[in-house]
Each structure stands twice: as structure tokens, then as C-alpha cells.
Image (cartoon, rainbow, N blue to C red; front, side, top):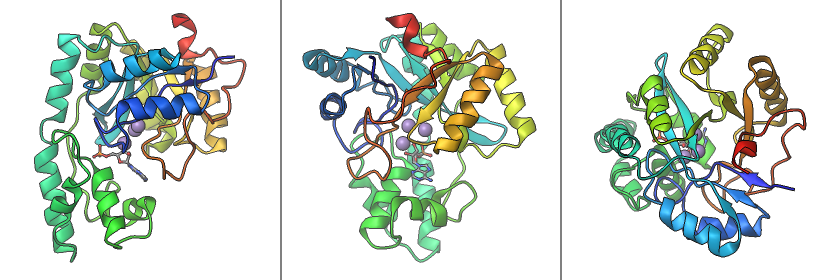
Amino acid sequence: MINADLHCHSTVSDGLLAPAAVAQRACDGGVTLWALTDHDEVAGQLEARAAAQALGMRYIAGVEISVTWAERTVHIVGLNVDPQSPVLVSGLALTRNGRYARAQEMGRRLAALGLPGVFEGALKYVSNPDLISRSHFARYLVEVGAAASISDVFDRYLSEGKPGFAPHRWARLSDAMQWIAAAGGTAVVAHPGRYKYSQLEFAAFFDEFRQLGGDAIEVVTGSHTPDQYREYADVARRYGFRASRGSDFHAPDDPHTGLGSLPPLPSDLVPVWRAWL
Ligand code: AMP
Ligand code: MN
Ligand code: MN
Ligand code: MN
């Protein structure tokens, strides 16, 4: 039995544990096939692979790329990539560019709402200065009592369209797909259930993803409800997409599931990892 967890984060992006510590947690959770998929950065891949191998887990190199499609943010996970690919590495560097200025802008917007010093406060949680994310803001806002929980922060301040949110233009879908292909990897639509697209937009998005060579989506993820497991299993069947599974683990106190503990994929779907075993 393969227990695959192919989506999670470390201190290289907005997770709270170092790559080796995430590996240990994955192993403790029973994971046998693991990928660390930090946002827009592959700097944790060597540490992750070494830790996984020392623990007896199979390792797949990964990354989660921020993309803007139809004015909204979509995440594309690249799996089985070569983390040394110059095309991937330089593309990710371009994507990261601008995060710092965007974070300063979010700080200004929150200050205007009566929450001063949030940019500086969020920096305490940032280990990679190139990768300041809304998660770091959320942790600080919970710490100072401005919101009850991380999800409360997003609902009130940081989700798209909320008053502390600063829009940002990420990579184009076609570029992200090219970087992943150039690195020899497989592109997977991350947590499709999280995107606020209309039915028409979703159809156009999946068509374009397929035209660009994409053939896999996350079905069972910590970011989906059980209803969404069923909904996106149906999408995978309809489009002939392979399916992936991953916790989207960020921190030990995450409200959702830990590494390796999600339900298995529906047995009729083709797991994205089958080709690698
Ligand atoms: P950013 O890349 O800076 O836009 O931040 C996106 C990150 O914020 C995601 O990767 C999640 O870790 C986190 N995030 C986004 N929306 C939510 C939410 N509703 N609840 C909890 N975390 C969220
Ligand atoms: Mn994140
Ligand atoms: Mn994501
Ligand atoms: Mn993620």
C-alpha cells in the first residue's frame, strides 16, 4: 500500500517546520511516497530528499507555483521536477519578485484599518525573505488577537477582495506549465475546489490546462471537503485527468489533516504517481 502525500510546505515558504522536520512528520504519519512542494521555491529540495531517504520514504521533488488566470490566483503543483533546471529556477525567481513590495502594501492597507505594524510583525515569522506570504501576516494577526484563527484572518482581512488584500500578478499558466515541462515534471492543478470560478470559467480553465499539456488534478487534499473529493473525482473522470493526494500541511497546529492521514483516492482513478513507481 502506497501512502502518498504530495503537497506540503516548510520554512522555505510559508510552513513552520524545516524540510527535514516535515519529512519526520510525514514518516510518523505513515507516508511512504512524499513530496515537499514549497510555494515558488525549490531551495528545500535537497534537504527534503536526503531526509526522506534517511527515513526510508520514496521522494518526489516538487514545487507549488502561483499563477494568475482570469484575474484570480491558481496554484499549479509541479511534481517529479528537476530542482536544478535553470528554466524552472529562473522562472520561480521571477514569480517571487514583487512579493516584498506586495507585503508592504498589505501592511499599509492593514494600518489604514487600524492595525499598524503588521508587515514588521509578520517578518518575525518569515524565514525566507523572498517569500513573505499572507500566511505570515495571518500568524501575526492571530498572535496579537486581531482575529481568532488563521481562517478568521483570511475571512476578515486577507482573502481576495478583503480590505487587507493587495492584488498581485503571478506567473501566467502557460509559463508555469513550460517551466515544469522544462524541468521534466508533471503539472497538477492544486486544490481546484478553492477557486471562485464560475462553471464556465472552470470549464475554460481545465480545457486550457489540458491544451497546455496538463493531465492531473488534486482530488483528495487537506484543502477540500469530502464533498469536494467526490466533485473533483468526477472532474478527473470527465477530463481523463490523473489524480493526486496531499495534505497541504503547513504547521503542526493547522486545523486540517496531518501528513499521510487523508482518505485514499477513489480506486477507479489513476494516481499521478503510478508512472514513477
Ligand atoms: P500568498 O501566496 O501570499 O497569496 O498566500 C497564500 C497562502 O495563504 C496559501 O498558500 C495558504 O497557505 C494561505 N491561505 C490562503 N487562503 C487561506 C485560508 N482561507 N485559510 C487559511 N490559509 C489560507
Ligand atoms: Mn501556503
Ligand atoms: Mn495552494
Ligand atoms: Mn500548498
